[in-house]
Every structure is written in structure tokens, then in C-alpha cells.
Length: 72
Image 1 (cartoon, rainbow, N blue to C red):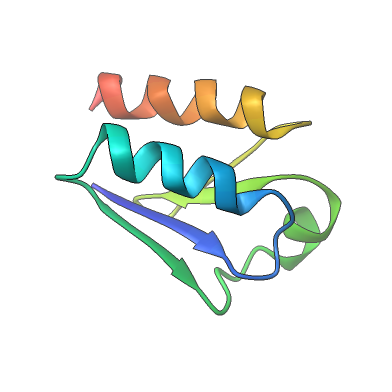
Image 2: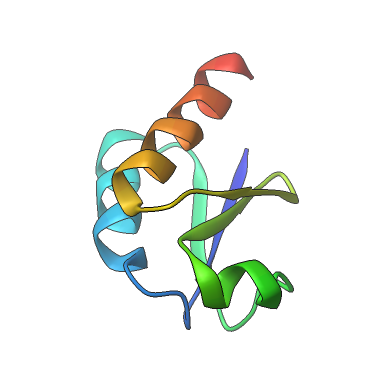
């Protein structure tokens, strides 16, 4: 499973560290761009296996990412 963060997205640091710690076996990286600029500027956004996931804040995004991980 590939999880990608944009280096320009605010609030990515805490979520990135939390996921790396909890799921060290997953391919989690911060990239220079994840090609989701319209969402990335507005709210916390990641891609999970190239699928965009956004939420109003980092905590809600974390819960959505966990759902994706457990559903895979």
C-alpha cells in the first residue's frame, strides 16, 4: 500500500509520523507534489494507492486513512 503526502500540505508532519510509527511496513512518503493541488491547498489531503483522501482536519484524515488501510 502506497501512502503519499505533499510536502506543501499543512499539517502533514504529525499524521506522517503517526502512520510511519503505527504501520512501518507500509510505503509512506512525503513527495514534492501528489498532483492534488486544488484539494491540497484547501485541507489535509493524501493519496492512498493513487486515490485522493481529504478531510477537514488531520484527525479526521487519520481516521479515513486507517479505514483504507484496514479495508485493504
